[in-house]
Length: 478
Ligand code: GDG
Image 1 (cartoon, rainbow, N blue to C red):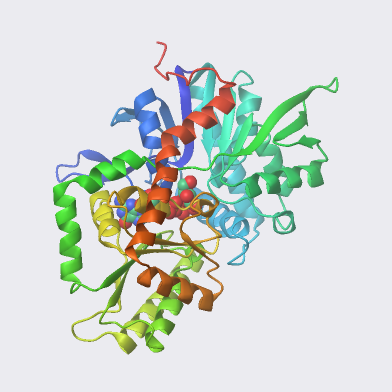
Image 2: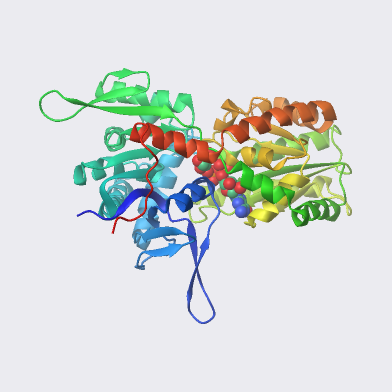
């Protein structure tokens, strides 16, 4: 069975959120998040189909159109969400792939659910893809889909992009289903990673567990019975953002006015520092708070001069580790504010909310110092967004070397967030950096982000996938 779309994107979540109007009508709102930010422009311009879960359990939805993108909903039941999504994806793969910062759980029932749900996504994609179509599968929740798709539809060109790190072999090897996952991924023609090191870790796992020969980015995967092989590419394609769209927002007078208002409402601190993260243990929010707290305690920074705004967007709130993290972070914020805030100056302005993109841009514009202290992060788009917004060539980015973005954003102040003293020194350096140096660094960062935007990212991935053929138009044939 084949469908009509020449370009199909498959990801765990559709890029929309479900809402009901007062009269019961369904409203779909475009939702925030790394992947949506990255793919929205490409999907709109190519009129592709996007296969994914619409975010509501136990309900069937017909395919529909939103903002020029055809959306194909995949049903997930409560059990699937618990076992495939919260269980295997977010309690096994996520911590394992992020260097076991939190201990991964290994449960056979959640693995079974992962296989079952991957099969459902593969079937949905196979049903809408035109003969010979390009299918681009995303992220760690769907690593078995490339192989399942290839078996169902050998005519398809299949790409996979891993948004999170791929761990070193010594860590990856803990996974009881390590061979099955590699087999699933090797169903793709091109497997994309954020960093050179991630692609290298993957190739090494393939050599160690399957013994397939690898030459640079090429892996020869045995296919058929006569000793034939398929060429699979495993390579880094660092993801980016729609830099021009962020800058356009930042140049709007009402957003600049809002940025000024934010500073004013915070009592016009000399230095405004900002952290924006999903509330996730990979983001190093606790390390950041610890460093800031010590600087205040030692008098190297004063609450009269410096305020930290921390946005911690709600995330995976039913997974135990995330519940514990929220308690831990909020305890740390409460303690620090209790110790250092005055009636007129709050040390940390903490927000467990999700904001509209316009408000995020106003915050980036308002912030003198942006703190990205991830302990491990595939890329970290927040770092790139901050840079894209600063058309005034001001602001200092403090960036963890464990975020993929550090491979490109060399003019940031790079830190090892585990080294609290080093992080403290970097924060003080950022706060005290002379204007000329800020401008020089920010100009260079901005060039990098402008030249390597999300359009360049998707074009280069699709070029690798289609061997240089034009990016598929994606318009249904029928
Ligand atoms: C994964 C990988 C990789 C956050 N809060 C709000 C909001 N956001 C937006 C940010 C940014 C996105 O969400 C977060 O992207 P990150 O890259 O920082 O992190 P993850 O969510 O962990 O994303 C990551 C990414 O995939 C892409 O490949 O870079 O390494 O972990 O765009 O701005 N947006 C709005 N309100 C919020 O409150 N509007």
